[in-house]
Length: 203
Image (cartoon, rainbow, N blue to C red; front, side, top):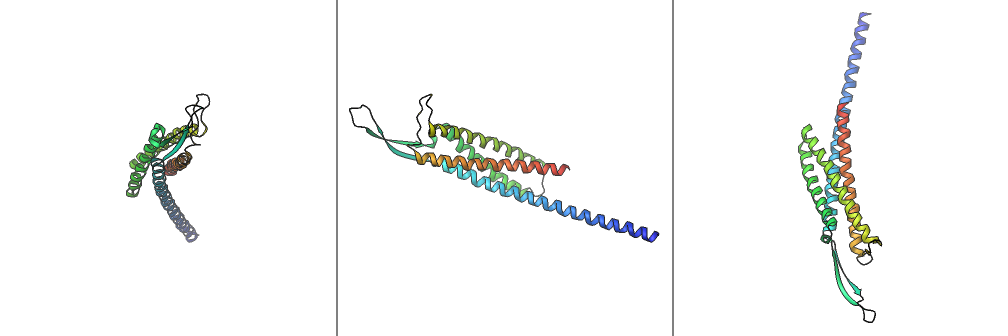
């Protein structure tokens, strides 16, 4: 009976050790997966925000517009140019995406270097990720509002639409807005990932 009891206890101890080892392996695998996911998101955010900043930063279009001075005179052809820095919202957009791109590069290096997983550095990175989310979403909103006026105009204040004249400029601006929105979502996913990681550590 004693031998059976000891054997039973010994078997339970071995089984508990195996289960504990399995749990540890799963925890380590989860950490590696979350770390890899974070690195991929940061790299994608870097590429996306760089693309958005460059796409709008080089945006320029010149076209000839006929202007009628009087009904008895033939229209006067005038060359007009649209550039991104003519509108403060577009300047804010380019600067915001450039800042987000530079931060993504720096945070990527810091995340790779932080293999020990220091809590202080991780928390600082998460806070700045949240700042980038707010910065990018605000720049996208401001640029979209101005672009919408350019696309549709505003009859209440007699603002005429210009996208029928500068179609290439508007198309490129719309593409930059869409790409930057993807960057905003990527930074938001980083914040969610960090929050999930913190929740798992506390369990």
